[in-house]
Length: 225
Length: 241
Image 1: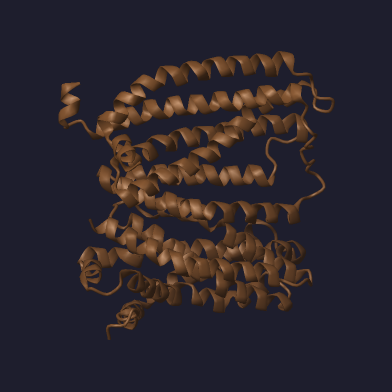
Image 2 (image 1 turned 135 degrees about the vertical axis):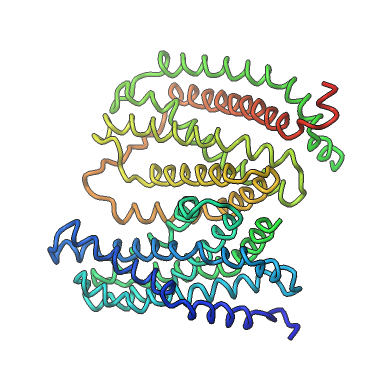
């Protein structure tokens, strides 16, 4: 019970249960992801050649934006009802607890994007050979987006401002994920080996996993002061 | 060493010291920039490829280096403030952000003006230009986060944390952009030639760099002094002043 990971499972289970009580909210990022992807064919042209060319960037851009969408909720309701303060005072390691919260958030908002991505990829005429790279890239990239976003959310939780500020904070930091993710899919479409960008995404994920929980915890403490 | 550290961290001491230093740095900046302007616009020969157009380098390169230096300084100051809880360090970080954003903007604007005759386009998705653009957004994010907080202490720590996370990310962003660009580089973009620069062109550039550095230090001290005045407005030493 008193190991370094104590409290992780409890917070994870609690956040997941809360999320499943509100299926509507949970579906929002997913719907957003599908909608953004649907906007591009409408705005560009239904030409398969063109859509296939822009698909990697469109899918990754849409994933980036929809992962931003749900972030505002990550800490706000807990901040409002005081349970965030209880987490800080609980005596458990705060970085571990915020990591659990972020993981729960990713399972609800990031993982569905990974699962639905092949469907959208096929709608954009992305060849099936690239679907695996797309899913693997999203699987490695979206947790980093959730971690970066959690830091931004923790910094802005105490503020009344909406998510515009949050986007301004998080998007510039997330550009490498977008570049490597889209590049990997691009390579796979061209029939080349996409392993390089995927390795880089994995490296960034591990860097983020090891450092960002500390920053998120510090940001939560600042917000609660 | 620690005594020096503490002494420099004390706002009254900094306020007086900066007051003495500002005229010296300001004067040096004026002289250096004037000399470098004369050297760059009159003495330096025209480039054999770019003609007189290359002379914008004397503004572009120093602003670009200052913008990077400003971000590093901001993150170091913010980190110092977070770790040792030195209020003056936070004041420096708050003061340096708008200066850094201005230099970033200047570097982008001059790069764009330079790009029009040389590359034939106002904007190219060149790696350095794109990194600089992201840097501008990092500065703007930092400043908006700071502005969103009413409480100075909270604003200091929240924006400081963002600056520290940002500075870890900057190399990753830079290399990802370089890599993205080197793979996407189309044939339409003419890469800026990097000829070995001759001494006649180099010395005004280095002088200008030193001049920009002195100017940066001057403005930073003036802005930090005004930050100190705002933050310490209720303190005793300020009333005595």
